[in-house]
Image (cartoon, rainbow, N blue to C red; front, side):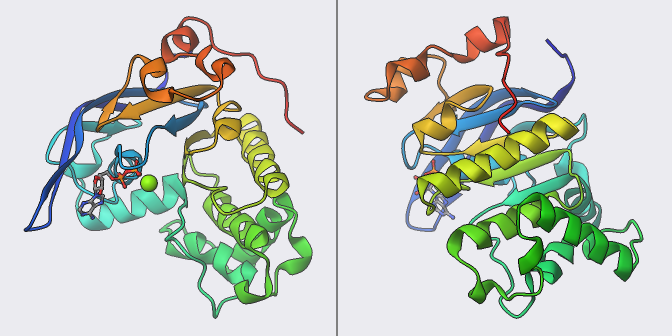
Length: 260
Ligand code: ADP
Ligand code: MG
């Protein structure tokens, strides 16, 4: 398999201290993700999935350990460099990264291009936003406000926004959380298509066994650590999910059918 590591971590520790309680959210995470992989992160509520995504993507700092993204240590960058690096190389499909309600779908999608230091003219930004909206099946909704779109359509706009830069890595935290199963599947198909066409890396936190089963690999978490024994975490999950342990996948990557 490819040895092109895009995400590498060693002994990542992150503790929240609220003043009242101390919560050890990450207790030593060792993780390797290869360029072009589409991985799912699964595990019980509170096990640290969102914290892991926030720290890997440089939104949040860690207490100790090492995180390298494409060979670079984001924590050693100054804030401005890190913000620019993230805008140019990463896409976010997070629930709290809401669409701006006063901007149209197209204007929301243009935002990362306008934040980037790479000079993009207003005309070019609009063209690329239109293209990204087309890719998510929303070309005719470009001029509508988020409030005029359904939940599934809004989520597709956030995906268009995450992808408009063709970022090397896309982070998605419960991207299909509130959506019906057909819309969820459409969004998974779209992410898989982009993953295959552009070799973009997708890291998707999900509770859904159906979503997890479509990833190249499931990374299981429990109590702030990566769990090497998925059966211990998965409990009641369907047996076919457990066929693919991280070790199996490392030994022989799954061959995937195009999903479109
Ligand atoms: P998951 O996404 O797997 O549900 P999280 O990463 O959100 O888990 O949370 C991991 C642990 O850290 C939980 O115990 C959670 O309550 C705690 N936690 C998360 N964010 C904060 C925060 N901002 N302040 C204090 N504790 C937090
Ligand atoms: Mg979470």
